[in-house]
Length: 409
Image (tube, rainbow, N blue to C red; front, side):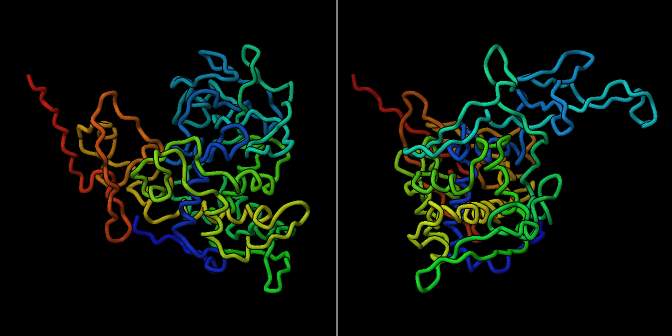
């Protein structure tokens, strides 16, 4: 827990305002409009940094060319199946303590994470949406309706992922971030556009060490299993998002530890566009040119650079250090039981220590007030020395219960 978080040498050449970059990273991580059909990074990382969904989570073994679901002794698996406790373990021995004993049941099916509905990318719509073509007619269906694809591997946790030299199960997310792809120096064509003093643009290489989280972050947004329609590029994703307000259709909590200062009045999304956050967070030489190269602007070409570094900064933010580790979803606080006019907070099962962070899902989703509740303003928490937040209720004290007015006779 006390291990220092690795630093990335040379980061100051790209990031000029780290708090804004962290806010940008959190918005990108949680925004459902990032994906082609409602998928966000957090769709598979919202529970302790991983995925605890139970429905439509089985892949039939696609890496091995298998498209047929397995059968357990109790039931048949299939698309949109809801997992049961009795389905585990997936490899059963007559004597669990003897690896040479008879195999009672085994399968190459993988318990993984539901992803996209598939389809081929066509273009970015005028109002920051996407147009995708029809999906493969041989895709899995239930009662005549397509179901989401399921990834061939399950979702690794983001907690303490900053300490991994490489990321992803196969280690393909390099420790050296090249600004474009997960593969680091193994991608010889990776370049970003730099604006020069004379107004020209040049393609340059990026090699940032201790940045495997940034390398990992640029993988899922273009995966047609995880978040994207097929054949989309990061330039297309940049064109879609640059003019968009982050979290436009999602509620942001007034006491959010990162986004409260950027929240719109009323709580729907943020006040600034993604383009404005990028320009505030990153050095101008990576976005300031108005030249168009191959039909895309500089900020659109360099969108994977902004995406990777912003999400890495959010995921390794020391303020997110909880008793479980570092990363989105790492903190799970024990809150006092409070009678609040807008919501009731109860201790979370299994919470071992008291922290002053709100859980990730409470930070991102504004809970509506109860019908008829007295609307009392809850002031944002003041940060403690060292950057820690106290949460919505200061030092754990419950807000005073509003007094009812007595009706005169």
